[in-house]
Length: 538
Image (cartoon, rainbow, N blue to C red; front, side, top):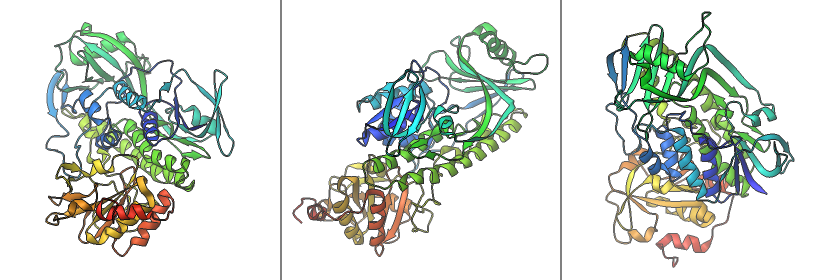
């Protein structure tokens, strides 16, 4: 029997499939499309999604295939009136290695994720439409349009705003569609040399707008967005290649023939909707199947990727019997409020953008704020965020990165490299944390990476004997990021969020917390001995 069957092979479904497969679960991922789509659609991952993709081992491929966000050039009456770079002055910091997102065509991102998934022996099953679900209590039977059926322990609907899985579950998708806020979109080709590919061009006029952003990895490809043509009664017309050429010529003042091709045409209406629950028994929802919102801020695909990263480790722990079913309840507990916040934020950014474009020099940069980078979305309200901390960093927050060195060799590394992979991480700051680290390693084995973080100046003879995962906080960046003032243990969840911050008097809290996430266990004496000197000799 398949452990998890994923319906929908967009970025959300593929992220979830990669995460589950690397954790050793059996995964099937199906999609109703007869072939992998070539649509560019979403413009790329934001900084938080880049961190997720780094953890999955694909960020280098994404960075190589994409480009940095481009400056925005705004026009009025065909004349350039202003340039704006929303990321001007920003730079990576020790705790956040990505200060801006990446432009990449959605089909290319999906291709990278499919390649990663293939490395685990899993391929997307195209032309497979799910038409029925039967929850049998211990498994779900999935019925397909071709008459076949398959059992799975769990099913996750990642099948978009019109989710068949959500409809089969009867879960409401409440909200509204702004019929008056309409945009036509597509992928177009423009004669090379006509427009500078180093900027995102935005024409905003009294009678409409056209936006053209170059698609990375192409010579002549552009993302096309525009206000639609309308009939005599003011109703929007369906997009056509000739219609795109007329809009292009009207706003850019360039010859219509310079737009040589238009494909994947669609009409977009602002939808603001959210499922009222993310789970029905053994079936769960993620991505657009659970929430849709205004495109302002570019959070649609990113929220789905981050849904998947929250859900993956929890499903794995439950399927493997290392955590109880109640762990799955924390997926909705944590992600539904994030979706509600995202709906509010994107609606606010849309209003700000619509106001901005009425003024010469205004443009889509109004949609971008520090909150759209995804780095400030934690889960302080979660039942998995145990009391602790009290400084700037609290339980439930995103776990910061920091440059360090491998204690045994002096080789430069980062906390994110320590976190990466299908495990919990226990960081021990100070000599008083050794007991907690030994217990964690002994009781949980490979499920937990126990890491002593030595302070600057604390290195000395025998340091390497503390274990192969010991780190040296040479510049104090790790202690600064985690607000460490005394001996402290920090438990970092597999999705790189802080679960618990405890001083040396709270070892029982650490033990109990790890027991919730990875089952209560008795320490292995040999593993405990190995933590003492890194040799297993005690």
